[in-house]
Image (cartoon, rainbow, N blue to C red; front, side, top):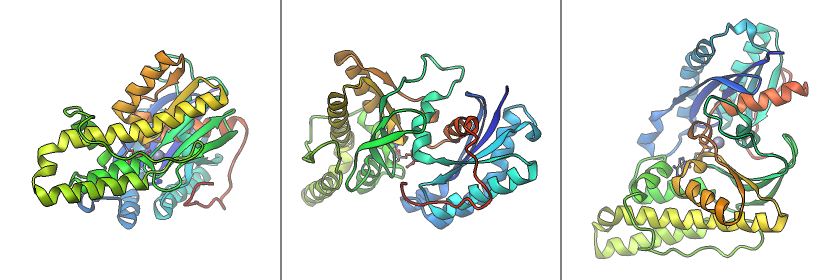
Length: 338
Ligand code: KG4
Ligand code: ZN
């Protein structure tokens, strides 16, 4: 049976739509909102307004690119949360009316679960089969940092998480302190390529178990730069690449160290990464290095499925469709992790 799911993602500042045919992606369209760059971070009200402007053209493009008619859709899946409520409401409202108009089911999708299930998407670039259960997934995004024990498509246990800031937030805040534009993660990644990671050292947190903490690191970067700038106002400009490389190295080593602890504790060697920070080139390289040294089987999403996208929403929607796990018109968004 051919199942076509339209996925809609609007949890933060990307308006995205995708069409999946069973587990094979047919289109994946994202409209990025440039307006936030001026403010150094996402402005919720502006994000909602931009979603309103983008949603119809983006969905129209996704359906056209998939080369199907809207009447062939089997269901509409949308991001229910966590995310910005005003942004989520735009996607949800559209999904509800579109599904009702077409007389097809509506499917609620959790954004974080979808980041993990992105590993099951098949497309022309798929090189290896998806991870087998159980596997570990380090989910690292702008708002979340978790190690998840994935038992099956729907049973997932968070075995470690940040007690304060997220890894992506730390990249973004460090970049902001250095005067780099938002989002800072990709900027730090790019500048780090020209720099040395052993020039500056920043204190790493000492948190028990599999939990993370990034607020101390953020403060130490802030104070370190404030002191250096007093002596040399051009300090950041003159050391940008080394600073970026050193900060990136610190964040990635905190993540990798806990991920290795999780693999040791659980005895699981199927290890995946997901979320926006999984686009980071050093994190990807370290994971591949560990695959060799610790005999892991690692799963790294394509860049298009690392940062926010609707393909992962459509993929999760397909799995829920098979279970007939449908929502109704009373579906409401949630801001925080469930
Ligand atoms: O998953 P995502 O697109 O949105 C959320 O659900 O939050 O993640 C966005 C985060 C931002 O903090 C961004 O700076 C970070 O992912 N990011 C990166 C890279 N690309 C995106 N961080 C480090 N290196 C990158 N290459
Ligand atoms: Zn995300």
